[in-house]
Length: 553
Image 1 (cartoon, rainbow, N blue to C red):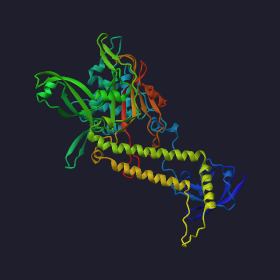
Image 2 (image 1 turned 90 degrees about the vertical axis):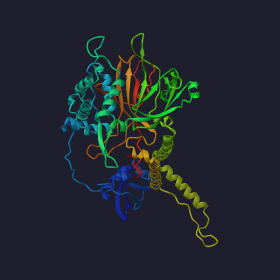
Image 3 (image 1 turned 60 degrees about the vertical axis):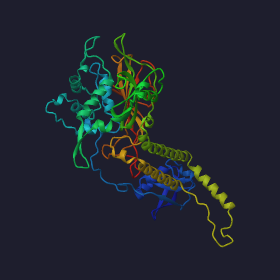
Image 4 (image 1 turned 60 degrees about the horizontal axis):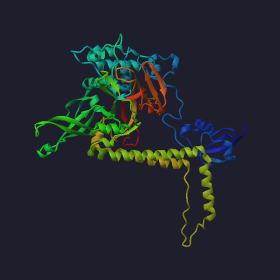
């Protein structure tokens, strides 16, 4: 093993280090960790060619005995001190089922099919993807005197989600199903094709559960006047608002003085209407925001056709989209399915569906988000380029310095002033500069958020949504076939430290009690076009925005 003795200079101190030239950069970093307490990932070691990379070949750096190498970096929180773990290390085989279910990489619980209950299982898995809903349910207390807790849908959902969080096995949602069938008897309909219960529409189950939660899942918050006001979880996080105008199509009504009427209407979902022209989600949503209504005209004294135009005046944090794929077919007396292929995005820009007033508030934030993203991509692309060829930047800088030196005029000018020479930034300095610029851009982004929207806890502040869950249907009618759910994997969270990592872009596919990890291209295949699995319900979530300090929340 060939070694070279070098001097590492860090924060005014010098360390004599024997460098193994047959090793890589990460070995030296761990040597310095033992000397300085600075974790390897926080070290910036400046060598010829720029910053030392983990995979750098030490034999190719041209190190010389006694060479002084600069190191920058400070220990992280708790770094540099070897301390005894505060908790006893527990191995997976020694954990309880509930503890194992909380670990990083654990498979979420599926739901057992109790006989044509896939419509309910898929709906529940999509709703469980909302962390705020799980938190609100955990705090919920059954207070109704007239209603038995076992028949309270909200109370049963709380218990079911809690049980699901403590296992990786398939759960049997029998008590919740019993509460649902008691509250809404249509879900207790018997099958006409044989023994057992009939298949149901997942969208109907979704809507009925949401309505129950809207009534029961509430908390009380004191307002500025110190009065206590009840807030509904659904109204806060999942309900939007329309500004609508209704105008008679008949010219005689307008000539008679009938004026268009305006109103505000809450909504719990956006409908994507599908016809022979619909190819993308945007087409169907625009179609759903304009409709014809038959009603009596007071001016004409008879029924007339009215056009109702809706614009969104409040975007909720969680936006539900329903593909209206089922319609009543009289000749077969059942809900038939529209098979047409309709694509949908993983990221939805909802600004164009909003009122002019809301657009004015959202567009600056949306545009700044795109600007920050582009800057982040440019920085990451440059970092990857240097990582692929760590010597490239250093060699280029050496060539520039040599050229500048050859072409440089004498340092002293005619009037005695000293000429300024060009300086070059190291990789560490370049990255620090770019990181500071990005941080400032994120602070500017936060400052652009409309003050009124910022005060609305459950509102979308940018108009941009990311797809989090999809309920799918396979088959030719709502009363048959099979329902499943796809839920995007959340970022891993350390159960001890609470530190959150990065998402890997993969999804969980919930096929009743069978749970499988799939890639995002499976979601793109849910656009429909036949009897295969096609999206019926989409659940979008507002993208996260940085705090006032520029930190992503």
